[in-house]
Image (cartoon, rainbow, N blue to C red; front, side, top):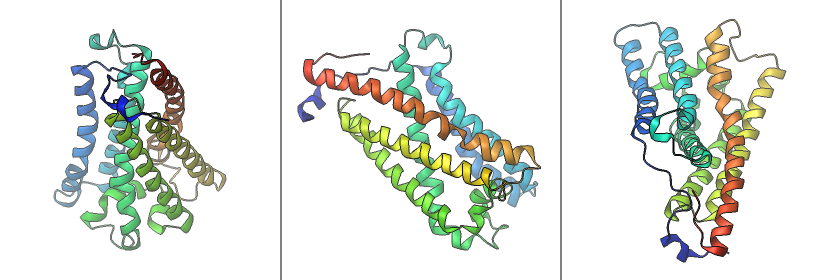
Length: 256
């Protein structure tokens, strides 16, 4: 049983500060966040081609997600003294946070707006979803029942993961329940992503523009690919973290 008194103790995993790493995250995710309003201005106010702008934005998104996850493994001088587990922790937390932001700011609103998307391709409010719909996956326009159900599961899973993150940060990473919640969220991430890919692949890509490189490889495959890779890192991290947490509960020893 977790002892709440341990929450006041030193964290099990101490991740040293790294200014270059923080700047890398800020550059990658900041540029992607800014790209949404910037691209809408380019398309709707300046008349740029919506497909071209959407393709550039999708490439930016791939770089942000994959680069943000891998940033902790870069050979920065400030990271030289980081242990492999500290790097893994930073990578997993980056994925978990960025994935939940995506779930709650793009997928959750889609669940409420998808009935109104058809016929509003030229409206600015719908553009954040049409960036992906235009060639990436037209199911987000037609909204079949299985996709809506899948997104409901994804948003619910995001709430579970956010709860796990809160438990970990509040307990200074001593609460194993937070770790278990993140591991369970990773399993769901992996499962629904495999289903999402297989349904489209087995069906012969009926909803994806396979004749366009960016639509197929960037928007559909690479942009979603991190959800196939990062969960495995999360499960490995979770196993190592649980060993540290349970040992800490028994002995009070702190690990790095």
